Image (tube, rainbow, N blue to C red; front, side, top):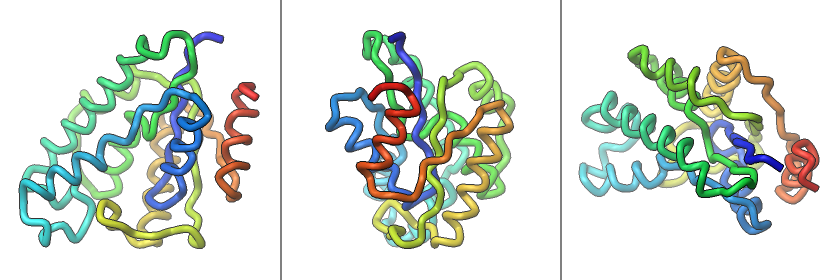
Length: 187
């Protein structure tokens, strides 16, 4: 099989990280979500009490923060050669940056759109909001209602760039993994 770029995306608290972890435990190569470490670092550098919302709007310079996220995701995209012919799973893709900026009403320059048009993934799986498993934590600030809105922005943004999104069913992580692998014909 040729290397395939597969995005696993979804709003906050949808079980994305659990799916990525299980993919990795099953021997698949996964690029991790970069914003969690960036959020943790931003909190260390600033006033942690100031983070009452997503860091995209809480940091002193949201435009610079978004540029760093965009560049980090582009760098991950370009590192595909490390995978050596195997499928690569991405915990969020480049269009996620635009979806979140749209959600927060932030403007962005044309190179954000160009990055989405020139760095194309092969398959996009979207995990829908799931109230029963939603939990906030130190890097997740959105309410469940906001998570639903983020999901809508993600879906709209990926479709804007021509992706046929595959919705992952609301079921346990093992069945979600099986669904993804079956859909990719990896099982």
